[in-house]
Each structure stands twice: as structure tokens, then as C-alpha cells.
Length: 195
Image (cartoon, rainbow, N blue to C red; front, side):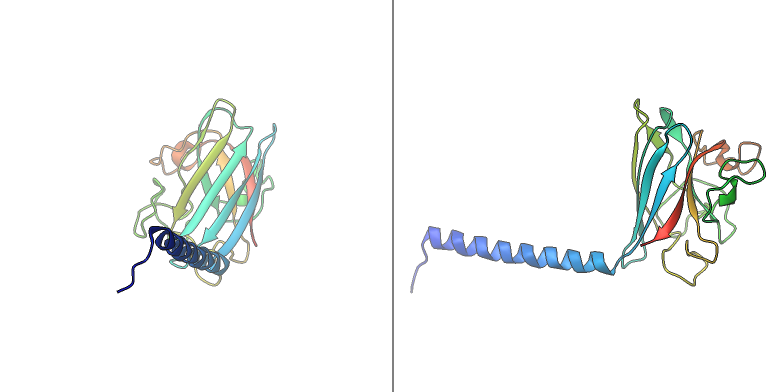
């Protein structure tokens, strides 16, 4: 019976691990290319700017990454809205974006990732701006899709937008002068574009 030296075994192990790593990287790259992608350039008055990226995986979950600066420190409601327009309408800044994205008529509520939650499909977690007014949010949702020709699609005939509000979303209030969640005025907006 032949024996293998420790040095030869270590070299063989390194090759095996490297080969497995390359396969894992190739597999991840293939999965990433199969994903559907979108992006929104977010802007608002007083220097608010940033972006949101969207990537739908093979399981139908849309991963959302938001990065914004120029906000007042604290919590800010954020939602996907029904129309891909960031224009003023009816005297409301970014009112052209319409209401919260809600294809199934659910009540307003707290964002959850699960498929059977009772909230607007466009409800998202509150953004938390630090003392410098910067926000980073990573979340995911199975309540909307980047695919076409289904009720949950962000890419229907008039598109969709992401809107940031001045106030914290309370996840409870359904309507009123400050809107669902009492999130208040719309202070930034970005049209969601398919990549």
C-alpha cells in the first residue's frame, strides 16, 4: 500500500478546495445572470439623492438594496408606489407616483418577507437615517415581482416608483391627512427601471 506525504495531501486538498470554490463562483455567477434586475435613481429637494437596486432570484424573492443620503436623521417611511412617475400632482410633491403598490387590496401594514402577510405589496421597512442623513437598507419581498404580465409586477403599463416620506411609518394607520402609516410628505422619489 502506498502512502501519501502530508505535503502532497495538503497540495491535493488545496486543489480540490480551489476547484470547488471555482464551481461555487461559477454557479453563483450563473444564478446572478438568471436573476431579473431593476434600479431606481432616487432624488429629492435639499440634496436628497441615492439609489435602490432590485434583483429577483429564481425563487421569486425580490432583494432590495437602498442607499440614500441627505435625509433628516431618524426614521422615514418608504414604499413602492403604483406609477413610475416622480412628478408633482394635485399639489403633492411626487404625487404622480400614485398610491402604495397594492394589487390585491390588502390593508396597510408592516413589511414582512413571507408570502401571506396582510399588508400592501409595496410596504417596506422604515429607513433609518444616521446623524449624517445616510441610509442603507437591505430587505427582500415576495409580494411584488420584476416579471411581466402578472398582477404583482412592478412593470405594468405605467410602471412603479419608490417613494421616501418625511416621517416614520407607524404600520397601522390606513388613511388620513398624512397618508397610510402617517408617513407624511413625500420627500424623495425614484422611477424603477428594468435593467
